[in-house]
Image 1 (spheres, rainbow, N blue to C red):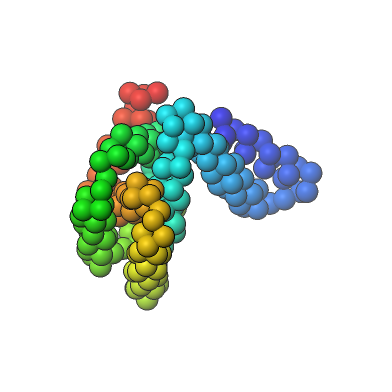
Image 2 (cartoon, rainbow, N blue to C red; image 1 turned 135 degrees about the vertical axis):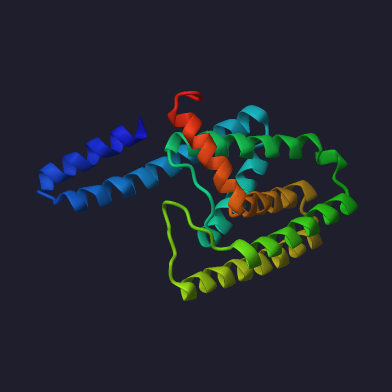
Length: 209
């Protein structure tokens, strides 16, 4: 649906402005990125209200997207696949946080947060950045730059969360952010690409239509 809308809008601009096909494709891609992102945010908000997890799902998805900028990671080859996976996983983990919110004390929070930080460091050192069909990095210097940027971002984020703990921000909210990072780091693991490829094949084969 979104693909069709973006295609028609870009064709209209091509006709009215006498554009080259290459320019039309750039506009179509840009429209798709913007409209697709807006639609996904709207869906996240709707699911947040339905399940009473709005604050968790927004924090989780924000931290996921923030670290994805530099670290890359697996991506579905279709918009529908991306929506199904991201909305399902974000909703599932946000619901789990809400269910166990009252059980998250300082010890549990510390163990989970520290585990995610250690796991993230391991993934950054060994696998970041990892390519997908939307971004392929061949230059080794460029790869080192993104690895360092992801590492710096993690350090800054951890310090920000330490400050949040000091000001007595809810453990469940802080943990939502860390889980978003955890999910993003899982997406750079090579086996995640194998799983995603199988999912995409099933989706294209009509099993998940």
